[in-house]
Amino acid sequence: MPAFKPFKALRYAPGADLDAVIAPPYDVLSDTDIAELKGRDPHNITHIDIPAGGDLSRPGQAFAPAAGDDPYARAAATLLDWLAQGVLVQDGAPTFTIYRMSFTDATGAPREISGVLGGLEVVDLDAGGVLPHERTTPKAVSDRLDLTRATATNLSPVWGLSLADGLTAALAEPGEPVGELSVEGVVHRVERVADPARIAQIEAILAADDVLIADGHHRYAISRTYRDEVRAATGRHDTDAEYTLAFVNELVDDQLSIDAIHRLYAGLCWEHLRGVLAESFDLEPLAAGPTPATLAEMNARGALVLLDPNGPAQWLTPKPGAFDGVRALDGAYLEHALQPVIDDPHGANLQVSYQHGLPEMLEAIASGAYTGGVLIRPTSIAEIRRTAREGLLMPPKSTFFTPKLRTGFVIRPTEPLRAQ
Image (cartoon, rainbow, N blue to C red; front, side, top):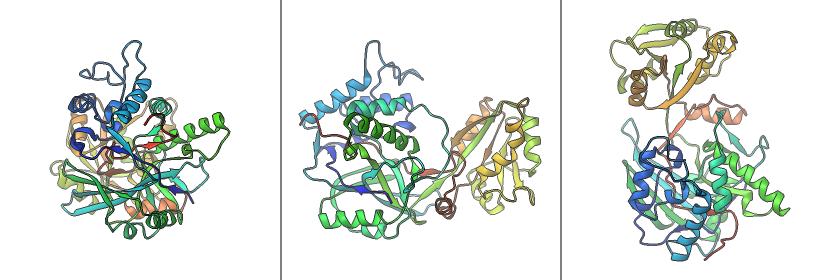
């Protein structure tokens, strides 16, 4: 089982305007978002977490450094400068940080996710203990790796789900309040845990079972590469690079809110896409919509929805026997149904994109950039747990966990600080 350790956290100094300095994770921000956050405050965490220059007012330029500029060296210098100025301060002893998110989910039900920020052990691929829950898509990772090398910190946490029992109960008692932020209908609260007995209790619970990565597969992979580089450079296996910043909460139904990540298709004509899907699904036009109510009806019907750029949407109801032996996941159903197109070397060049949110899907279809799209249903907690226990992987982009953790509440050094 993986180790989960406290560390001497870096935090914004008491009294900081958290609304001005805390940010969403880097991978959900547009160029416009980045420009707004950087302009909000000279100490906004994006100045370190997304240091690249360029004209942030123009799409596609957020990661284009200015001529002669090393954005990662600049991020490292900024971090040290903030430490010297007292903008950031470090805990005097290793601590955990309880992180709570209170919100109302899409059904109108109140929820609170309670987890803990700490250092999660970085284990080798397929070594067990820390488990992926879905296949990942290729993605450029050099930016995050270069940033980690330069700053020697973990800035954005991996999100892990503990299969052990008892973590939620262990976190019920509040810790020392160190920050609160309300944004987009979510109240984010962080509380420091410094008591050695409570730290030991949390460590013991998380050491009792596996941790399943919910969000941040690529960040965890980068931490493995970084760990190996530190091992090669130092000859040691006991440095802080053996761990990475992670938020871990218990895998329980009443906390997690999981949305679907829908599919967009291109590279083949509409008739071909519809025809291939019709081999495995019965098609029936929607009476109206799709609307938010359609998403609830999808669960009741056990059906998906096919979006046509030039006509009404259609129900996709699995044909009897069409998916025998296939995991009961909409993403797996679609992969199975479209396999003839995927396997045909002389056929269409099927391209799959992923989009969260019904309005965003309808906008994408209306743009004309895609042949069609499919709305799928969220993955259940039971299916996530079963996947972990059986050592299986879901198709890429099977789950979208909400709300998103904010960046900047806690920074984890991966080596001793070079300036105080």
